[in-house]
Image (cartoon, rainbow, N blue to C red):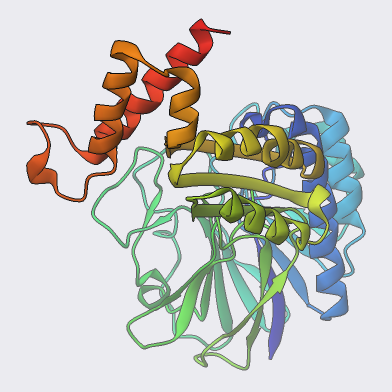
Length: 379
C-alpha cells in the first residue's frame, strides 16, 4: 500500500494582470495555498508529494520568491519530488540550476533526468521537461516492464482527448498509463481537475489541477489529489482535498426590474468572507432608467467596496425608459412624436406590424439612445 499527494501548476509569481491592482494579493495567496498542500500531506500521513511541473510562472522569478518556496517545501513531513514543466523547464537558464537550491531541505528532490527512482515499494518514472514547447510525448521513454512493484509516472503535458494539438502541447496518449503498465500517471499542465478512466475502467490518469484557482474559467481547481494504491495492478483510489483560498464566482443573471437587482444584493450579503471573493457579474434583460440609476448608485458601489475584485458586464442589459420618463424629456413636438412611435414598437407583441428589419429590441435601443441624448443635451 502506498499513499501520496499529487499536485501541480502552483505558478508561483504569476503576473495576474487580469485582476489589476489585486495582483499582489493573488500572488501572496498562492503561497498560503501551497502551505495548505504541505499541511494536508502531513495530516493525511502521505508518504511523499509529487509536483507535476510549473511550480513557478517562469524561469525569471527573483530569488526572494524562490527562497520562500524553498522554505515552504523544506517544511514538508515527507519527501517532495518535483519535475520542471513548460513554464519552468530545465533549460540552461532554469530556475532550478541556481545555487540557492543548495539550501533546500534534504527531503526535496528536483528531478532533472528521465530515470526510474525507487521510493520504498514504488518505482517512480519522472518526465521532466527541458524546453517550453514540443510535439513529443514526454512519457514515451518509460520502459514497459512486468509490474512487481507499484509503478507511478509523473509528467507535464496534454492528454490527447481531442484532435487539436497546440505547439506546446507535449502530447500524451489517453492510455499512456496502460501502455507503460503504470498503476498511476500524475499529470500537470491543465489547471482544472480531470480524472481519466483508461480502457480497463480504472482512474489511472489524472490532473490534480492547480492548488489555487488562477482565473474564472477554471472552476474545478483549488485542490490536491490524495492517492492510495493497494498493490501493483489494483485501481487507485483518488480523493480530492481542498487547498484553495480565493473564490472565483461567476453570476449570469437576467434582471428586468429594480426588485431583481435588490434580490441579487441580498444574495451578495450572504456570501462569506467577501474579501476573498472575486466576482464576475453579467446582467441581461430589460431595465428602465430608474433601474440603471440604482445599479450606478447602489449595486456597483457594493461590488467595489465589499469584494476583493469584481468584473461587471451590462452590455446585454437593454435600457427601457418608462412612459413617465419619456414625458419628462420630450413633452411635445417632433421629438415626442418620434418617442411615442418608438415606444409602441418597443412594446409590440406582433413583429408583423413593425417596419422591415425592426424588432422590439432594436426599437428599445433606439428609444434609449434618443432618451439619453435628449437628457444629456438638456443637462
